[in-house]
Image (cartoon, rainbow over all chains, first blue to last red; front, side):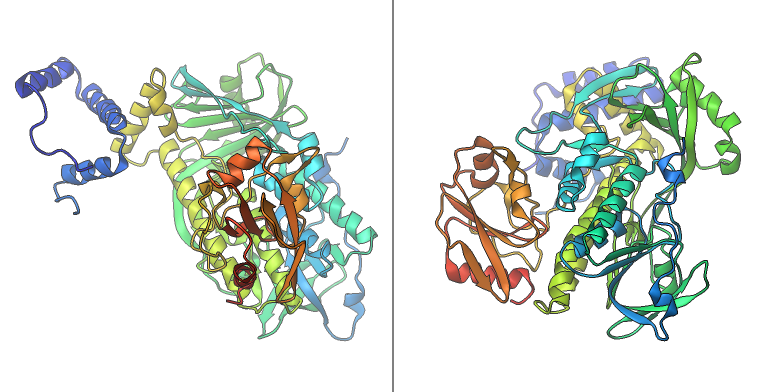
Length: 66
Length: 533
């Protein structure tokens, strides 16, 4: 399964506001910890190792291998 | 009463070799009477091959050292004739708890699979294992088997020749020399033989120190493995509590890198740490204290012509995951049948290169697993600690995070995928029994499949015809015929197939498998498994 890199979230502005609101009032350390938990939760939801690998590559800023 | 590790079990006795005018030649000399050296000697001797074990000491190892023995090790010990005392004495455990900070985050149960003769793990002090091996060696010797353990025989120099090795040995009566057709170095992580031969031992040193304490106490702690990440009594570090026989508990406390080892080892400094962990009121005695540093490294090659390295002398891993002694036993299990075939002239010396290939593969796997555990237990960067703590936080409420918690992945036998001794898989069967795998056990009435396999090759047939024995290249392969009325047998060896034929090596690894017997293919697979194809 290829990693989805085209728009896939309904109402993106609402999601973005949610993401920021979740971090509201947190210290840098608490925010970092929340982000780490979020990554792990989302990664588990995706599950597929190949998709996860493509996501890691995409996040690093190099094009995913064909 | 003296502890077993205080009694000389193989005291020095003068050998006739010391009075010989010239160095006496022996078939196999093993340096090191630890578990790996003793296992190698027993395996050889019970198949009629002379094995002389040299050790600079005369006692079993001091302190508990390796304590967790995996099922595969017990199965190998069964073949060597000392599995039963290990299981009788050892503590069987399946339950554990993981703590993070001041709270328990979850419990686990290893839920061992049914239908095996041996438990998934036992905890047993290494000195007991060594005692049972020494007893077995002495029993074999009493029956006339060619095995001898020479205590206080310290190897001081070795000279390699094309077809033998000369050993210079120091004893309480002065020096002497012997020659060995084959030398197996089982002399531990600091292997003097390796140093004498100027061989490499490279890898990664983990900048951390761990205090191990064996504590004797009567306490209500259950028979469980308890692991703490960042506990209040050892802040920023980790801790482990695990039960051994005789009311001895293994305690492991991470200390960090920048410490004074001699200072930390003193009882007056150890005892307050243990009280903080166990509670002020718990009464205990310290049996053994040691501080160790993690290393994950291996030799580039385990075979150097007529010198073979096995166990810690060849590879060293962090202790989390019980991959030291357990993998060392798999080394000798792999090596000895090959060495016997070479000594008996049934295989070429090059068969021993497959020992190198297969066990280097095993060592790589162990080093990878052990490095990953160490990276989880002792995060090396802020980001790595951030994710580690996130996993532990999530594990309290979400089952998905628990498989990510890594306080040691417990040793499983290595599958020799891609080994030159394997024949391509021809059965649409279970992945766990593909060529290269260690045979999983199955209970067959009162006995078990692995006990029925013996020390040689076996042709296992399931719902399939085959001759009762097959002779190929000087090897006699008896058939073991079973029918699949047992669910575990079906599940482990047939899968979707209706019938199967397995060629099983002397170390109980699968060499080849097919849906039915084909004589030409079976003969080719036997030749391939002994390096002749």
